[in-house]
Length: 185
Image 1: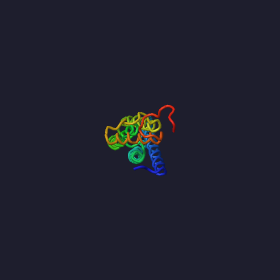
Image 2 (image 1 turned 180 degrees about the vertical axis):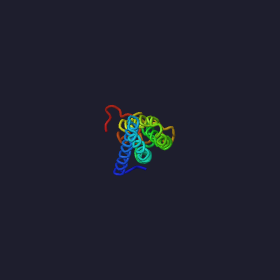
Image 3 (image 1 turned 90 degrees about the horizontal axis):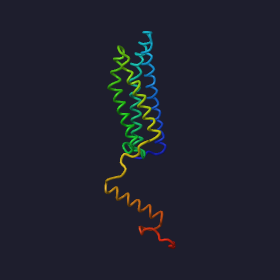
Image 4 (image 1 turned 90 degrees about the vertical axis):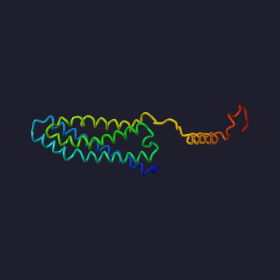
């Protein structure tokens, strides 16, 4: 499946917006946790923790799942693929891992935060770090392809055939070796 340019751009916009929303929600989580930790006012601490219960888990999970869905569509619909390049595969793994952590670690942790808000410092540090890492991967696209060469003989032969066809089109000659010096055309 290859996305048409207009559809690819819309999916890319959706991916960027959902990732941006995820980063923003994560920043608000950090602000609320830090406010609960440093405030001496019991009302401020209670309000911050109540806001965490209402705000943090479900909107963050929805943003994570939207980022995952748009990323999968972009991966399947573009030349990058889902597991063709290292940077895409790592971003996919980070996204799935973080969505699972939101569901199975953060959600129960929010309930326990009323007695010990320090337990939420770990997600406040780790999540933005991983999201920043994924953003950097998107921009710099490091590490190249996962598999350099196909070991499938059919694919290798078709690649050779394509190379020969390309060479014929460039030189106008068919596999007769290099043209001798001074040869007429």
